[in-house]
Length: 113
Image (cartoon, rainbow, N blue to C red; front, side, top):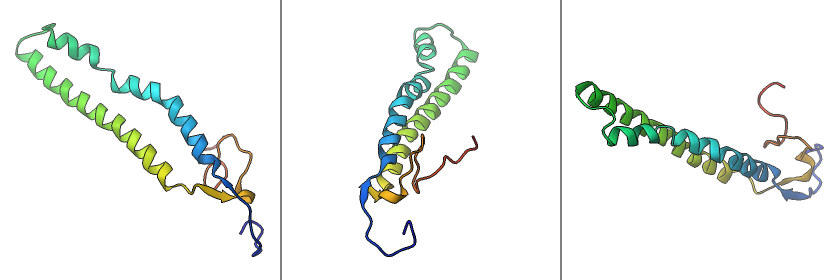
């Protein structure tokens, strides 16, 4: 295992689960903001801010963009929960590092820096 021996290891709660929960809570408002970015435009169009043929075409394009953005933000939530569900709840204590961004296998973040 951690030291190459067959000795018993002490298991602890996986710190990545708590770290991911923190990251998710920090991302919630920006994701909600992205999800709702077109709300004002949709309301204005529904209220008749622009009418006619070009307006209808543009409104159809807007509707498609809104649907794509909402699917993407909904996908973020589901991807997050799916990822956390695959994490082991407990890990060997010897694998836990004091890192500002723990990952499992516990180590450094996947980007330089």
